[in-house]
Image 1 (cartoon, rainbow, N blue to C red):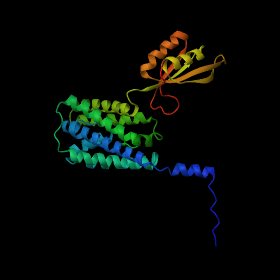
Image 2: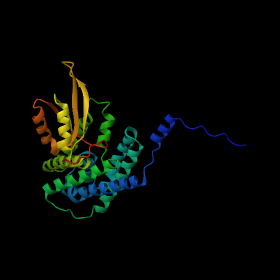
Image 3: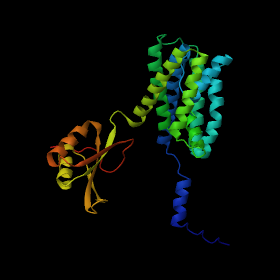
Image 4: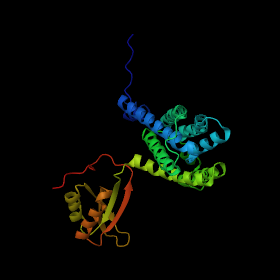
Length: 304
């Protein structure tokens, strides 16, 4: 007896299945794997070749692991794994399964590399060089792992978990946690090492931004002017950037306004201000940093 045909899924069901079962392409999987491998290796070099031999720490779970390893005279890799495991669980609940798996792989790779690199000679015993280059390598490693969809430190995951229960933002919780860790380094090692560790944390923090955003940071510009069409055309002609007109309304006068919106590089900011000076010196300009730009017509056109 022939079976009746299965009913076709509804469009809503198809969309739901796509959201829940979106397989990663092999090329994307390879790319993420390389980012994890390189990021974890760079991070381990920063620890074992610069920071740990000179008793300099970073903030977060890495700092706690270095202090614990020093006090117990045990391998750093053990504590890097043990202290991060609870945060992987938090990440699974707060962010998702993929994030937790990628983070676990990254931490295991990083811990394994610290074991392999533990016997190498420090690259330098100069504290300032160790601080700067160690922080740079840590930040570069963390940035690459974040781009792969994971994390090498559970501090921010913990902050996200507690931000709903405490009257503080994620950034404030992370800052408080790191101040406590860096202060502890002063008692365990020495206060000059704690101050060097603070520099390491700052260098790593800025390096993460560079890895994630790039050196050519994009900026969004909103312009309220009496000459929106002229300014919009000048931006397209002189900067080669696309322009979008947004329709607004003045709260005080109730008049309709045409808002010019565009995205530029930070090197083009001065030229944009020159355009406003040419057409409307009293134009209102608001500029903000953008972390990522995709799609649309952001790609710069040739200027003739």
